Length: 214
Image 1: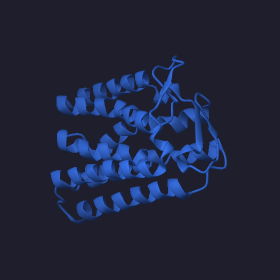
Image 2: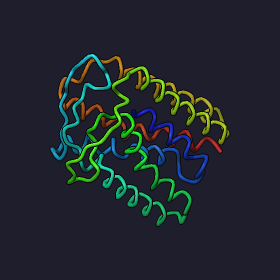
Image 3: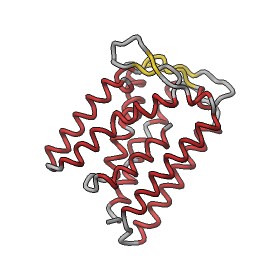
Image 4: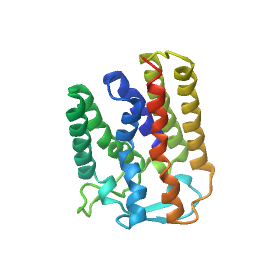
């Protein structure tokens, strides 16, 4: 549900204006930013399992360090502490801290039971919204749309780059989402991980947009 995570990143700017939109994107997607790196170095594992449901083409066999609840709470605390040390912004610190484990909460709603509670837990949880593709798409687009609307109403473009940069970002994220649904399963885990690394440079776009909005 990556587009839903972006929706929360957009909405968070209404609560905490000081952190850059790029930073809220990093916080909301930190689990998915680390995941491809952990796949490439062999710390975590996934299996490509093609099927008729596009949301269930991957079998997340092991991702305890990027996607367990405890790991995301710790990562959120680290990110929040680094931000507070740099800025002294308490509200922004708490929002960034909360955004990191919010990833786990959204995944808990969408994933089948494959999410660990701790890196050492054998218990896996997930409510399984992905089993219903139509409901998944409706919920994800609703969360994303609300988040974008909150950000658009809470900020004002100070130049054309702030105006058109925002809406071009929204369009590109929607295109990525559509592509993730209609594209065939990845040829290999390495190809999957390499493609997922685009999340890192992608966070520069919202950072740039935010610099052109007040």
